[in-house]
Length: 113
Image 1 (cartoon, one colour):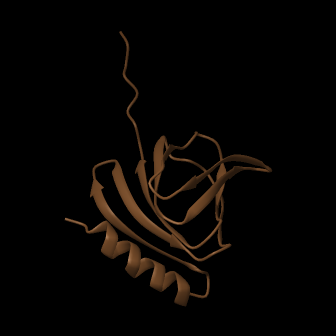
Image 2 (image 1 turned 180 degrees about the vertical axis):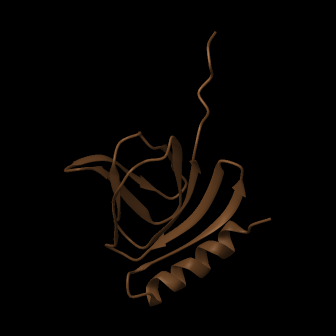
């Protein structure tokens, strides 16, 4: 079982040391479900990327802003959970932060007869 508090501290320390200001680890993988702890140093941005079929972010510490192009989707702090839209987005660390990213990488669409 993953200890999120321990993982948060470990990856915040690694993000502080890393040249790119970030650190991440896949902590759960079950079929299409994946959960990763991601830590970012203050001001670091995850560049724009496509969203998987389903995803959520739970901020463990600090705060982030999710942006859709030039528009802000929302700002989230520790303890907040956000369901991501299916649009291309980026993530900005408003301060040193860590979050749990939960994704579903593929979804079978039901077939209707």
